[in-house]
Length: 424
Image (cartoon, rainbow, N blue to C red; front, top):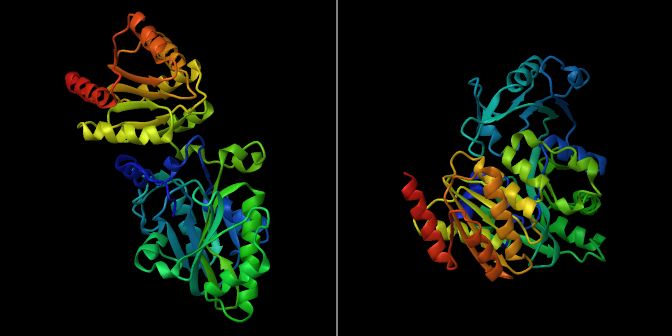
């Protein structure tokens, strides 16, 4: 539902990686596993399914007192499509339903310690280290509810649809009348009337209107309390026993709130992320790996997207999206080069910096220092424009290093692609 306009190359990268990290500018949104999100909802008083979590196939103690009519066994990884996924052991389905307690236990053992391969994971899959076992509820009807920060509205908006349990983008495209968007005034918050109106739009009836309205209000209170940038409930379900339940939840958080939300950020599952991305975060760099072989270092998400696209237009293929931001220092430039060159696919480095806040001379000094300290032996094309660019170009020229300094963006991109051809 984001209204950000993305370059075609980066759009492809988003869907390939599925972590939605490109939508940030100078921040990286934290993602939690499903059971972690459910725990936060439960602590906030939001109605969810009863569940247990197992993280060791030899220790099933959490399940000893968990007795329900039907069990939902769900592998916990940071990727979608789990239900249709396949384990490296041959087991089909990362989401299983059974009424047999013994079978439930066996499924848990079969999932933990194996890789689950879905349409959103790497080819080899992701290792399952946790399995959630939840009470299977009988759902009569599924709706959709999402609260997220929206640039166009300069604050949070609530998005609701009575057509839940499916791809909300498809609903918006085919039946836009089933989507309701409500901007939220951060000073007034969500009042009872607005919550009731949303509940009625979601087609809850009778006593369920009041119950749904209360759940909506609790979710917005949680949104504020934990400094979320998104809480997506799909589905927000009506059950056969007259309850309104948040069945599946996705929560994202702004890194800028890390100092207030240390407990939540300590939950992050970093072993499922690219180690280069994890390392970049330590130095306030934004890095996303892609499929190409031209390493890109830029400042600003918009310039990163444009850089990826212009490389592609010139016949090349970007290897990454690396944004050093607006307050970059020389040591961060060197770290950025370390991260870029740690990718064995990278054969050429392309630096594209527009110096507004950034001093181009700082970038130039960082480039020279990195090239010398790392013993860089890859072709390096640098395009600098803006603040103190004349001094920056002089620094590069006097370094004595084989750096290709090009002022025109299109020419610089062509030079990077040509350098790649020369490497072959």
